[in-house]
View (cartoon, rainbow, N blue to C red):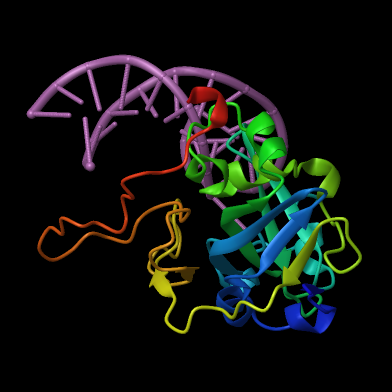
Length: 215
DNA sequence: ACCGGGATGTTCT
DNA sequence: GAACATCCCGGTG
């Protein structure tokens, strides 16, 4: 049913590919999760991108062909994963920021020891890589050949995705290059609250499923 | 709920 | 030395 995204899917500007990655499925081994939040990093013209100062030992994968994974170590603690969108030499990539767990949840629980609810498994770029077991060995991994792959299971991207500025950066902080599936509880941060307080809140579900061991 | 700070290591000034 | 595409925990209201 689900098909692997062909390499030509990635070979466009990161700001174009990013929203199209919403609702696609990230797979590694027995684990699968739906991509519900992404950010575009637009290469050497984007001061917030690791590619801003040109190719280095760390960011080399970003300047390679599209459809590969750029993995970097963040804050001395976590790994973050990007899909390179090419074309080669442009350094464009899409940061995968949040997943809705779909399969392999037992493996995710075993790697995310601090998680208490299902939404704790993949609701952030560092949590996502930890849940799936993505690390430095996967830097440069081919998303078309696997074992890490992005699949299309027939769910289209949202017709009206949530949009905001990117999170956790100080340079070029005004560019609206973060997209997310509005209303999905696995998004790392709820959209900015505005307007009158809503009692039947959609962003704080009353019953979020918990880890079996904590029940 | 919101906010502040610590952990921890690589990269660059 | 400082900054950093983060997460977690403990304070307070």
